[in-house]
Amino acid sequence: MQTKNLTGKHLIGGKFCGTGGRFRGVDPASGAALEPAFCEAGTSEVNKALELADKAFDFLQTVPVTKIAALLERIAQGLEAEGAAIIARAHQETALPVERLRSELARTAGQARTFAALARGGSWAQARIDHALPGRKPLPKPDIRTVFMGVGPVVVFGASNFPLAISVAGTDTVAAFAARCPVVVKGHPAHPGTCELVARVIAKAIDRAGLPPGMFSMLQASGYEAGLALVNHPLTAAVAFTGSLQGGRALFDAAAARPEPIPVYAEMGSVNPVFILPGAAAAGADKIAEGLVRSLNTGVGQFCTSPGMALAVDGPSFKKLLAAICARAAYIPPAAMLHAGMQAAYDRGTKRLASIPGVKLAGAGAAGAPGAGGTKMASCRIFTADAALLSVRPELSEEVFGPSIIIFRCRDMAQLHDAARRMRGSLTATIHGTKSELLKHGGLVRALQRRAGRILFNGFPTGLEPCASLHHGGPYPATTHSFFTSVGTAAIYRYVRPVCFQGFPDPALPEELRAANPRRLRRLVDGELI
Image 1 (spheres, helix red, strand yellow):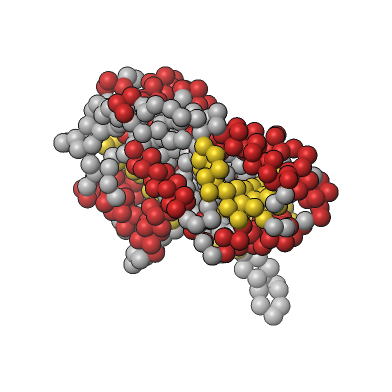
Image 2 (cartoon, helix red, strand yellow; image 1 turned 90 degrees about the vertical axis):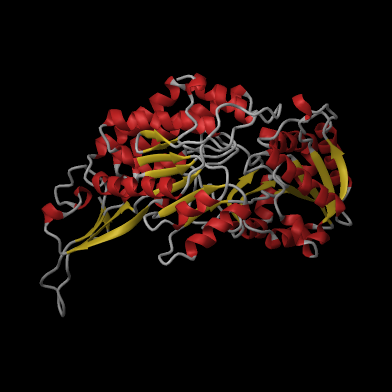
C-alpha cells in the first residue's frame, strides 16, 4: 500500500467515492502542502454512510461472535502488514517521530486484538438471570433476563494527537465493532492521508471476514459542517470524540438538542494537576523536576494527560524545585506541533497567561530557529504564580494545550488542599510525597477522588496502559460523562445498553441468556455469580 496511490476520496461501504478535492494534508515541520487533495463530505455522503450502517447493524446482531473476533484480528494484522506506509504518511502529516508512531501502531494493533479477545469471551455483556417463581405468594415472579447489547451506528471523531491509536482504527472503532455496532468515522483533516490508509485496512478486513461492507465508512472533511450533520442524523445512535473543549461541547449540545437526544462521549480539556507535598519536595526536587519536565514535553506537550499545573508549599524546597524545573526546561529544544492551528492556539494561550497580573514566566525552553519554510515551533514555557490567584482568576485552571505549565506557590498545606477542592474536572491528578505524607493527607486524596478519573502517586500522568483496570475519563470538562473510559476494555460500555427480556421462551433469547449457556459465560443467576 503506497501513499502515492491515495485517492483523496471517502470510503463508504467498501467503495471509494467523491469528486473535487478541496483540502490537503500539511507537513507541520515545513508547512508544505501534501498530495493529493481530499474531498469534502456533504449531506449525500453522510446519508449514504449512515443508511448503510443502519442496515449492517441489523445483520450484525445475528453474526457469530467468532466472526466479530476474527474481523478485529484481521484489522490488527492489516495494520502491521501496511505499517511502513501508514507510519511514513503519518510522520509527514503530524511531524511525530517515527519511533513514536511505530509504538502507537503497535498499541493500535494490540487494542484490536484485546477487543477480539473481549468479544470472544463475552463476559463484558454481564448476563443476569432471575428465574421465574410461579408459586410465589402473593404474586408469582416472572422470568427476567438482561444482557448488554449494541446501540446502533456509532460516529467516531478521531484525535489529532493520536493519529493511529485514537483515530480511524482506534479504541472507539474496535470497541464499537466488538459490541456489534457499525462505525462511521469522520477523518481528521490534519492527517487525511493516514486516515485513508487505515480505512483501507479496515475495509479489506471486513471483506475478508465476509461481513457487510456498510458496517464501516470513513468520510473526509476539513470543516465542522459534516461533523454536525453526522451527529444530527437520525440514524446515529452514539458519538465518540477526542479533542478540544469547544469542539466537544458543540457536538454535545447538538446531540442534546436533537428530537431524539443521543450520548456524546467526548474527551476534552484537562490540566492534570500535580501536587507536590513538602517531604517529596525536600527529598527529591531534582528527580521530580526531571520527571515533570519530561512528562510536560512528551509529544511537544500534545498529550491529553500532559501536566498543566503543579502545586507545592512555599519555602526553600519550593525554590529549589522551581529552579530545578527551569534548569531542565532550558535544555528542551523547540519542536513542531501537530498543525498550524494548534500552534496558533498554544501561542494565544501562553500569551494570555503571561498577561495575567501575578503570573510570571520563570523559565523557557532552549532557543531555536524556525522550521523549514519558516514554520513556527513550540517552545516549553514555565510560569509561576501564587495559589491565591486561583480563586480570583479561574482561567488559570483552563488547559493550554502544549508544553506549558504553571507552578503555584501555596502558603501552607491548607491552601494546597483548598486548591484541590476548587480544581476543575480532570483526567488525572498526581500526588508526590512520602508514604506517611500520603496517609496523613487523606483529605487531599478524597478531594481528588471527586475531581479526577485517575490518581497517581509518585508518578507522572503521561503514558497509558490500555487494560481492564484503566479509567481514562473524568468529571467535566475533562469528559462529558465521567463514568466512561475512552481507553481500555471498559470502553465497550460506551456503545451498549442493557436490554431486558421477560417471559421469553428459551430459543428466542440471545445465546448469552439461554439455559444451556452455549458460550460458557459467567453469569449472575438468581443473585449468584456462576
